Image (cartoon, rainbow, N blue to C red; front, side):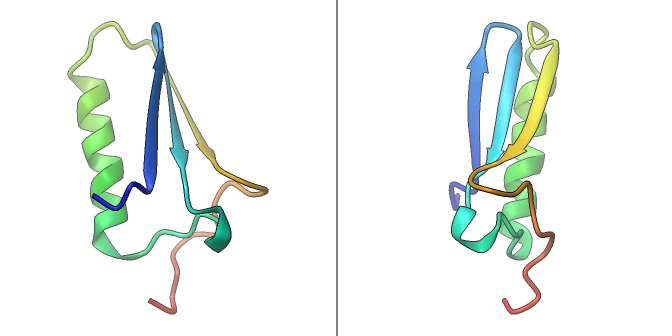
Length: 69
């Protein structure tokens, strides 16, 4: 795991935070995508979760994919 996705649960609400603010939360390679897939699997397996918030750390949501890497 690269710790790109921060998973926080407060009751029935989960907040997923893309946590790479120095790179404007750009996705790098397949590992970042896999972290998102894993988090979705965790959410899907918990029937208590009713809402998911996807956000980015720092000043922007996400700049998309990092084409330099």
